[in-house]
Amino acid sequence: MKFGFLVLSSVLVLLSLPAKTQEVAVVQLYTQDELLDLIKQNAHLQRVQKDECQLVSDIQARADVMKVPAYQFLYGDMLAFGVCVKKDVERGWDLMQQAASQGLPEALEQVGRYYHTGRFVQQDSSKAVIYLREAAGLGNLKAQMRFAQMLIKGDASPLDMEDCYRWLHHSVIADTKTHQQVQQLLAQLANKMPGAALTRAKRPL
Image 1 (cartoon, helix red, strand yellow):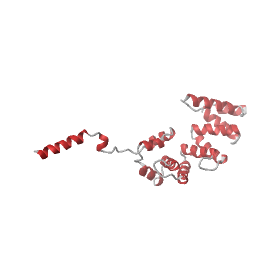
Image 2 (tube, helix red, strand yellow):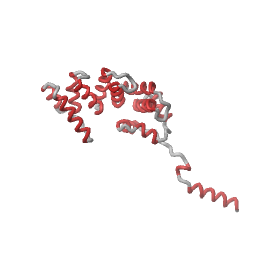
Image 3 (spheres, one colour):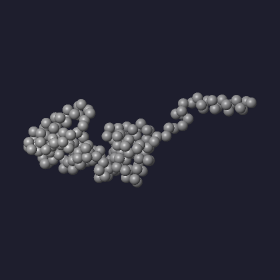
């Protein structure tokens, strides 16, 4: 009888414990769309940290073995900034470039931005233009805005002004501050463009 009482007491104690102490919650690997949304919001590294670094092995496998661009980008960023893994900027940069070479707009924008600002690599405007123009043409607003700034400053070919104006003119922007910034860029581009080119750029897509 005493033994039965002890068993029952033990069961009751276990049932009263918070769920977190009974089992470790299993973190599901991000879907491709979910990860792309996190990257667009620049929240991918915070999400990995929030998930207590439980998915590092899965992320690495999808980056190194399966070579999924979004995961190459994520793992590259993790290595470059030392998030949940030992910091390795050189390897992280290589993975970012691999993602960019597969046409991931966010990777193209980031590699171009780093070449433009000289982060991790030597500043190189000519290389920045190549990556930013490609990302801009794929609809990446950050790349379009930075590319416009380079055109305005004379750091990119004037022949690209018409395309850049067209991209920004037809962009849909929810954020008021960003919308105003784009309006200013469009005005500055317009001042440097021939009237015929400006007219063409404003035509409906």
